[in-house]
Structures are given as C-alpha cells and as structure tokens.
Image 1 (tube, helix red, strand yellow):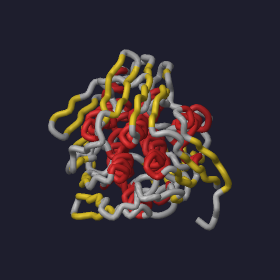
Image 2 (image 1 turned 120 degrees about the vertical axis):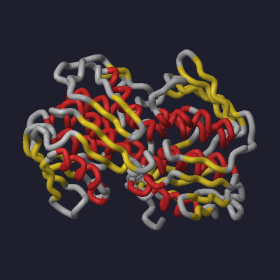
Image 3 (image 1 turned 180 degrees about the vertical axis):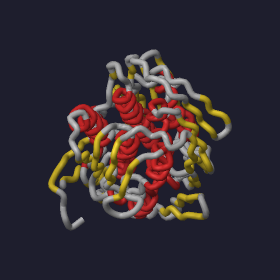
Length: 422
C-alpha cells in the first residue's frame, strides 16, 4: 500500500474543476436499466470504482449467469444487487471483501424474505455472503421496514417494486433517515415512467413496466463538499465547479446552504457553480446530518481547521459504512488534539486543545479503507502545511482523479511507499 504526501504551496485558490458523475445517481440508473426491457442510454455515468464494478457485474457476469457475484468493497452494489438478484431467474452467491462481510444486511434480507425471496446466509447470520435463488416474489405485496437505518435498503426495494406481480406497499417505520436519497430514487424512476404514491410513511408502487428514456447523470454534489472545505480553509478562493445545478436530485446539494454559515458563497451559473470565500467567521454551532450523512466527515474537518466547536447529530448511519466513520474521525482528529464526544445522539466537536495552526505538520492520516476519510482530511493541509495520507487509491471509490484535481490548483501531491512505522 502507498501513501501520499500533500503539501500546501499557496493560500489563494483559483481554478475550474470538473467533478465526476454522481455515484448515487449512476448506480440507481444501472439497476433501472437492468430492470427495463428496452435499452436506453445513461449519459455522464460516474467513473467511480463502485459504479464501474456494478456496470461490469450487470453487463458481464450477471448477464452471462455467472453463479458467484463479487461486489468487492461496493456497499451500494451489495444492497441493490441483493434485491435485483432476488427477482432475476438463476442461482447466485453474492459476496464481497472482508469488510463487506462485516456490514449488516439483515433488514433488507428480512424484507425480501417477507415478499417471498429465497435468500440464505452462507456465513454469519445477518451478513453476506448471500445465496439467492431468483424468482417471482408474490407472497405478499405489503411489508414494513425500519426507515432509520439505511435509505439504500429502501431504494433497493423500491426499484424492484414495479416488477413485482402485485406491486409493493412499503411502510417505513421509525424516523426516515436520508430521505433525499429515497426521493432521488423515486424521481429517477419517474423519468422512466414509474408512478408512485407517498402518503405519510407509506410508499405505494403498482406493477408497471419501466419505459426506456435516456438518463443524464449530474456531477457529484458529495464530491463538491471537499472543494467547499478547501474554500472555507483558504485565505482567499475562487473555484468553479462545472455542471452542478441549483435544483438537484442529490440530498448533498444542501452543502451550498450549510456552507453559507462557514463563509463560503455559492453563485449558480448556467454551466455550474462558483465558490468564493467571504468570511472566516462561523455562524452555526449545531448541524443535523440525518438527511446528508456523507458530508459529515467533511464538515467535522472544516470545524477542526477553523477551530470552531460544534455539535453534530444524525450520524448513526456512519457506523455501518466503509468503516465506523465516527470512530475514524475521533481517531484522526485526535492526532491534532480535537475531540469528538458522544452524548445521546449528539456528537460534540471540541477544538479547545487543538494543535492545528501550531506547527502541526506531517501528521499521518489513516483512511480505514474509506474514500471519504482521505478526501475529507486533505483540505486540512491548508492549515498544517503538509500531511501524509494512507492509501491514496481509496478515492477511486467515488472520485478517481481527486489528487490530480488538487494539483491543478497548486497543491503538491507525491505518492510513495507507505512507511510501515507510521
């Protein structure tokens, strides 16, 4: 494994960046394409590793009836394919990396079993690998699922719903987390002719065919968060991000509103957005990430870099991601003297003993096989001059050319063999 040494060369950031296509939109589009009986084109498909993996599995291994389907570290692929393969004729073994086999999937499997799916665990109960026998699911057309754990479970069920003989009535229990991702799924399905109803916490979708219609994938708003961070932590900045738009399907587009309180202005242009730094003053001390958990790591690092104490909530889903992201943040920010303590569902960021801005240089950042850890911490180099980050290739999961884009605006990024003493 390699590391990358990132060095600051300027405090003034200027440039234009083309973000990759949205991984979330791309992965949904690929599943819908597989469920549609007529071909259609997906434009601006993400080049993220997860999307490349899912496209390969769908068009090569699943299409040719390969019996073992290995998603690697792609969590979205694991969840979406669990549902898709349940309605796809054949017998399948769905597996992934060691970390993937530690990520729970019981809620989704239970929901599919209630519909009539034939799914068995071949290892630990509640976790992949899964043995799936695809068939029509007609045991019932109404089920319930806890909406507070993962919107991907819900999206997986919704996307196969139109193909079920009697459709699906899905009751969401508890507090519905990451609601914008569910709305994204339904909006993309609507572009392919699928109608739905959503009353209170019940979503209804009748049996109906997907209708071919070319889909355009918007650039990734999650990826924009790292550029917002760079602007917030700079002395002066003017960054254009091409292709993003005001009215987006992506829940992480809320970053444009959140960052107003961190001194970053967003101007919406015809062909993207322009980010400028307006102030060093932070005017918010509580942020709820219930509907946008993927940008929480970025905001935690921004708070640390600006020395701003803040309380976060809505982080519970982060504990079942690529790593336990809350624990990872506690470990890595702790290297700079910044603490994160939990009180109920609230997490308090305390920068009172921070060593940032006090000649804290060349700190080694572990990434825990998590792309967002690498990219969330990289902007902090503006405050500490340099840092070494583990496993730079991990960003390929969602943003393969992240380091090259950093170099475009003046950072030095030098890869080397990992020093095992770190």
